[in-house]
Image (cartoon, rainbow, N blue to C red; front, side):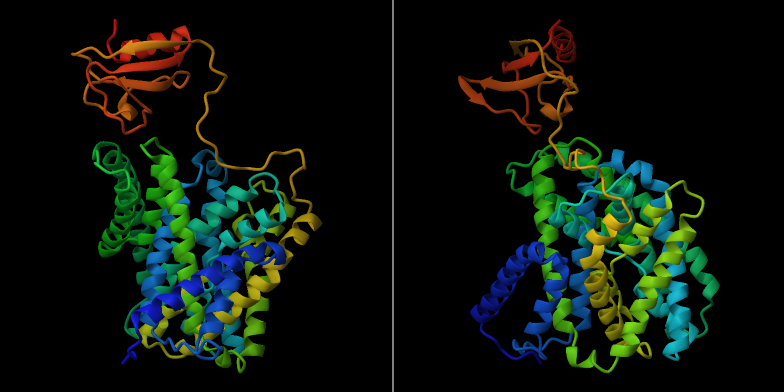
Length: 488
């Protein structure tokens, strides 16, 4: 039974933890360590073994919060990704997120059988749990230290971190099933893999296209409902995919990526909303996982955890990267950097709750080992990324501008004049949203006049007969716009 606590005390405690975490994210820039480490430490300090004395031992709730958080984080990451930048890194990214994850799981599993006395399946389960990376932590360090990377490194790390979670989830669930069902065959994992990835890819792509159509044509009365709509569609995508036997995490990332590569109304505001939501869910997830662990249980496994973390960082990760990228043209220095920045984050800790809930033998030891490995990885690798980048000479020249997202811009400065165009009664654009009108990229609709009122047009503005558009365009673009709305 959970003791009765007044609601105001719960809200006070939650708000304090959130505020402390936000301040900690600011401190992470000064300290040069990922904010997620500080979030975890805050959760541990607030837990039963820390001064906060908050007792929390509910793996199901932690797993539920983790799955919801990862759904929003992956969807927001896909939505904010630039497909044109990710495309050159597609092949190496997919190799790292599939073959690299598998090699890491096998190597870590083999090492666990040697030093921990695990069975092969128990070792492979531990390897699968810690096989995925968290490049979000890497990017936060690079931004804080103003380090810019050469070539395809940033899109490669982004693509790997976003696409390797489904493989890690698949392996974890598969090995849990094999451990809890002795009669099951390991060969059943092969068709299951293609089923999950196939269904996830198909539904993710279809939902991404459907989301664009829904957002552009639903015509909600209140702009504030559009973020709620996108949030519900992301959750629906994960749920329906998982219910049909597919990879929900792969589906939500692909849906966000497909949606982000297309034009839809309120695009920038939705991207900003999901960016803020991703931060909120990350903080909640890390705090919850920090509360779930008992630091006193980490002391007995200090030596074993240190050996496992060292093997993962110095052997398993480099070998998996080098083998996965063996036949690519990427320079060795860049491969070495990718091998070093394979930070482990919250995903392995969330995955470690699966064997806990399934009652797998050694599940508590696996959870504690995973938590120790994550802390060691972030401390050792996270704090040394700028130094390693300089040592391997993978830093871009200072003259190179930092990568950042910008609002869409015309390919060249607009040249032309301001022209007023009035929409006639039988124009084909009457009743359509502005986003559905073929407006040339070289033309800019500055203002809309309707019934003696002036409006700032947006993508969701519905055009009416008699509307007067103030257009800045050159003669060629103006002629194209006139044809699209049947002025001539």
